[in-house]
Length: 261
Ligand code: ADE
Image (cartoon, rainbow, N blue to C red; front, side, top):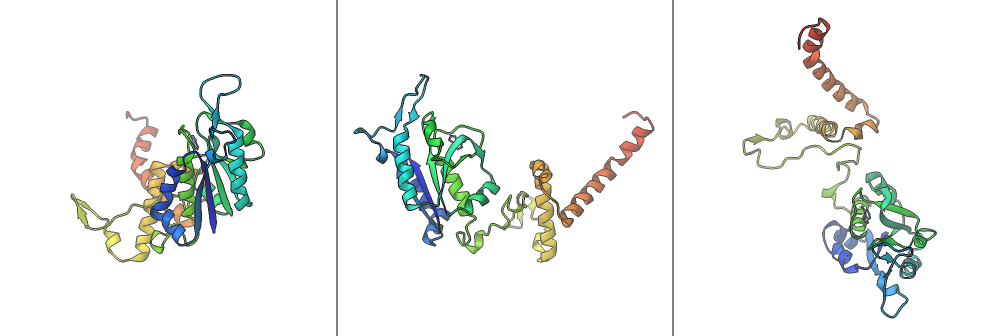
């Protein structure tokens, strides 16, 4: 069973997340275990302070090292093999392949910073990995931790029901997902593609692959650059390329002859 522990000063924020949807079902199916530790509970002073002013001056507050170290040690006690990850905008950027990598871990301890950041000494030795969910600044790591938990849980065998299979998800094969339709067959004058109503499985599969490739080419072409194409995919791209070539041909011929555009 994959175990997630979120270290945060807002445990209620993530606790609500366990109660819904696929995370809740994965917990009920005993495929994952998720919990949160309140960093404030590990504060060492009477007022349970978790932040302090930065040495050297400047604006903003910094998370003190002692409560964080205490919370990490407590989480490690129950999950000694878990990977200790700090959520931070300076981390490596999360994507589906990082999700697969994390899904292979025995557990994840997700450390959520708040304020301007955490004391640097926590990052040395205690933290094993730093992850960002994108190039923008959030007020804390909690949303990032939830994003990671959801993306990773989807990859754990048996965590999703049979109806939510991951094989066709966008990125699962390096392409964006194909276009989906459900009833009615005509909506506001827009028809569902005929082939999808045909019941012809091979043709449907081909249509879906073309749809995936077309979407990826138009919306995220860089995904096709970093990926090997199989024979069928190459054939489809070649077919489009030939078609485009045919459309352009008259212009190319006239250019050669030096005609005006
Ligand atoms: N904390 C603040 N911003 C973040 C981001 N983009 N990713 C992960 N953690 C963060």
